[in-house]
Image (cartoon, rainbow, N blue to C red; front, side, top):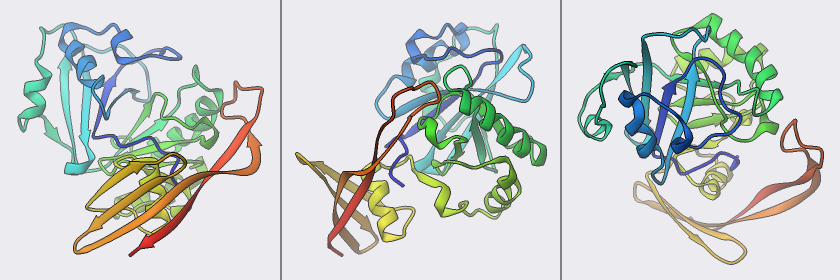
Length: 267
C-alpha cells in the first residue's frame, strides 16, 4: 500500500482508438473541438486524464467520455460526436448531466508503447476480464508503477491494484460484483488519498476515511485521519528495504525499493 498516485479528485477518461503516444500531457493531445476543453480541465490540480479503448481500436463517429469523482462515488458517461461543435465541459460537469453508471468501471493498463510489461501482462488480464463482462472493462493508458504490472484501476472507488494476473479475473470480477474490494494484498492504494495516507490506512487495516490532513515535515509526513468521532495521528516515513528493482521493463539500472514505516501517535 502507499504506491498509488493521489490524491486525485477527478478521473477524465477519453476513448481514443488506435495507438497511444508513449508519453503525453493533456495539453499535447490533438483532440476535436467537442473534446478540446477536457484537456484544460485535466490539467488542473488533482485531475488526471486517461486514454481508453475497447476490445477493437476501430474508428467511430462517436466516442465515449467518462468522468469519475470518487469522493461522490460516481462515474458519468457521455457519447460524443467527434465531428460536433465545441462543448463547454465545465458546464456539463457542474450540472447533473450524463449517464450515471450503476456498475464499476474497470481500467486495465495495456500501454505497451510506454512499458512492454503493461502491454503483454496487462493485455492478457484485460482479455480475461473482458470475456467475463465486456461492458465493465476498458484498456487504459499509463496508470503508474510499471513494476506492479498488470495494474488495474476501479472507479468510482479509486482503488488501484497491482499484479492482478489473468488467472485472477474471475475472483476479481466476483469481488467487485459484490461491491467488495479485491484481495487486500493486491491493493496498491486508494487514489482518493495521498500515498502517506494510503500507508497509514493500510497500517490501521482500513481502506477509507471521512477526511484527513497531511503535513510534510523534513523527513516524514504527519497524517491526521478523521472517521466519525474518532481521530488518529500517525507519522509515515519512506524507508529503504535494502532491495533494488527496475521500475520499468525499459530500465536497465535497478533502483532502491522503498517502503512506508508508520507509527501511530494517538488513536
